[in-house]
Image 1 (cartoon, rainbow, N blue to C red):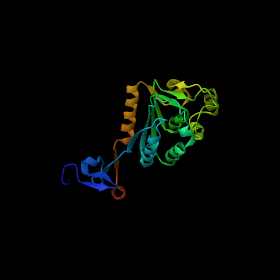
Image 2: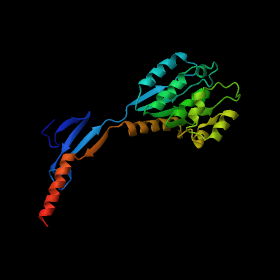
Image 3: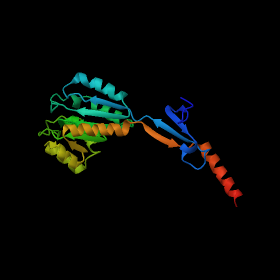
Image 4: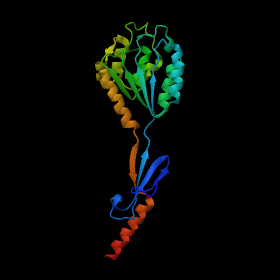
Length: 236
């Protein structure tokens, strides 16, 4: 809408732009115009990570993840602690998940609200931010030989854990609670369920809200500087 007290709106690179001049420019020179542009924030996609036993769910999950960009919230609330059949270990699913996350400028947030075991540990390890409820736990099965872990898990864990801690977790096999995982660097935030959801909402608001930017067009700035230099030369 043009002709309003605030100036004229126009589109610039997909953003809504509003031009200001005169007193609203807050500059000494009324010829200098400020341009305010509202740019969209990151898109946000929330995905429920399937159970380790849900073979039908993994194909849909992988397809949705491959279409996602921006901020991606992965929710883990599996009640099945172990992949008894070794489905994830023997498939290429986790390798494809690793490739998608590693090759795109995603901001991945992992929310853990239950037992995260064996191959599923790859998800918090690959994420940029990991939020965990107080009831969550992370680890491997006590028997190292019986544990079915995809090789990509070790590679992913090296991003967050030191070699010493990684060897202890994989060889000892004891699960750790959320607080201990936070101390080791595998989890970034621990709280009750309400606190975790509030933190998710805060991260979404921070990264996905529209951003207002104010700039001065190059032509206006150059003209104002030339005029100021000319006035300074005349006053000498």
